[in-house]
Length: 332
Image 1: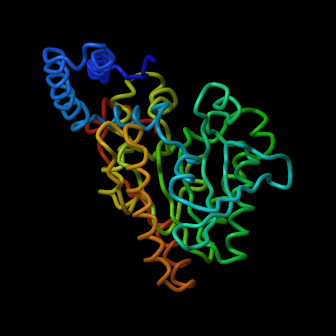
Image 2 (image 1 turned 60 degrees about the horizontal axis):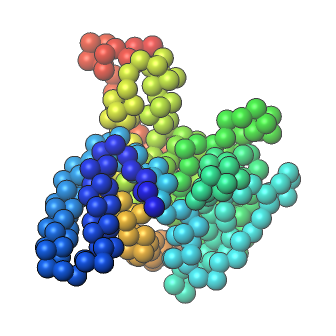
């Protein structure tokens, strides 16, 4: 079966495919073939390290979007027990691009909410490629309120290119649904832990992407706009996505440096899809640690600290036009 690969990964995938073919040969056990297999395995390891050890920002965004990358549903299954999914916003319908419900993290009862992408074309279309409608965010708000009522810590998973921008979504109040979700999550009287596992695009991510602890997987991203959106809308189509990605500073290492996120979880070499179980174990460790730390904070301090953090995220500096990137920001 042909594996999906980005341009920068193709030399590695070609070698791995050749290795698999050699191992399937009936003569694979013979000495000369065994020597070739051993040699290829060493070369593949060296090439994998070269390929993934110094990724550009755009390459990290590509890995965040990899079709084989573990989804929210995969992490729920791997990390939690006793998951009971809840459906619907009690207003319009059930938006399957948002998944949520009761679960246990170790021995602690929690509420889990997250974006849900598809694993194949059929699922992706059904789940709108992980782009929620207003009813998806209203479902999330309903679950937040249940969590608050029953004093359950809230754990959210971010993985979306953004909220759905279609006419129907706008007619049903997409902007206000996102605003209500952000308002609700900012004043919850329970610990809120956010895990960014892939894409974190715009308000669609922020709606369930703010809390007391924000954790990012190494190759995930979090940004006010996607690189493609930046080029198209802010730069009038002039520029490259590679350039935009660098300027946006949306990768986990940059966001950790700016204090926007609290923790970056290392991924297996090549991305979480290379070893999903290992990625889930590492993420679970950080979730458990965050929950233990936040359980020691009083309700009053929890809400005050979260609100203060939200109000103080980000900073800006003024620069002369000659100092900006090709003058691209002069009219923003």
